[in-house]
Image (cartoon, rainbow, N blue to C red):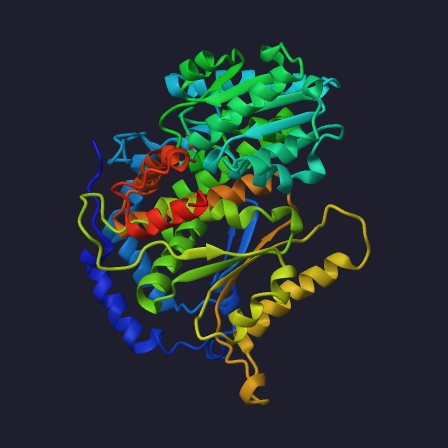
Length: 514
Ligand code: F6P
């Protein structure tokens, strides 16, 4: 039975936060806050497994922090979190449990789902090791989209320094044939393994790409589908009907954007090996334990989620910029976009009632230092305040001298400049400062630290979504466009514009050259 939740705007602390914001939140100045409190860095930084977070450059004081924690308690965050970890069906609009955390938990005796998780994990990792040892397979092509693409693609890039030599990894997601065609022309069918990754095994893009890949494989003389195709899916029957006999399953209680820990992570396991994949899971599990057991006041995902509520609903900030100062994290912004915006981009609560407050901000970003030479102008001098999240590692994975100090110096300097500003020059050269940022520091980018960082984000999204009273685990908003595309697709061939709005009809005719 789902645990009752209290929506943030119906909790007593909500109006206290409003009062506090009017009194001292709106005019809060970071520079004054540091000048008045020598202990601010210590008070507003947080140690968690594998991740150190400096939150002190955020526009939050001790009173706001305490009221936000009170809000979380009044909303029933702890009970909601415990309900997730107890396997309750907290994804109410789809009537599903939410158990991606179980994928990274050690085997739980007497728990049937945990037994199934570990049986599949063992089989998948044994398969990954066989592929790694098989010099006849040089190219691994993951065909999937959304959660069946973004997580594995991001993680394989992030863990590049751990990736086995001799294998190339490709990710094809778009229904745009340019993407698949560009990959196919690099391949030899006899040395390629296609992984068809789809939770549902019905997604238009993935099925179209999978059919084209299979047709190409057969046209090249390929016959051994069992060796060259594997399916990663909850819909094993559909994969078999498609002609794939090598399959790795998962379960409906794993959301697509939370699935890289499941069979969907097979490309990661082939890339970094069974031990590396187990370390990724262990890092995430350590963060799960932190989220489950640390008091709300010193719970990193909770503190981040509360800050998100404070910024979105009181300061009114509508976006957040992701700045990974590590080029291997170049796909992190795209991955986080799905995780946060597909989870929390909702405008009704779990009962379907309209919300009178904002939910997911827009997430966007590029690796540093590249972003500095593009859009950081707007972050420093634009009319909007955009909180920035810096990610950096202490130890690089390369041995080139000079680079890493310069990289870190730039990350620190940007955060400093955003906060301090510079008022003496005036006019066009003025920097208003007081622009907030968070700084996440890892010792090194390893499977374990990456796992912890991603789990931290998952639970942060859970926290803000929980207070907002929404279902963070459904995604009904993606359906309408899919249905309309099915209606439009045959019209591109026939030219039938009947019943279409004038703009769509006009564009259809233009595309057909009519
Ligand atoms: O359209 C959105 C979505 O359902 C995502 O939630 C999901 O990650 C993606 O499509 C891919 O779905 P599937 O893994 O079932 O192909």
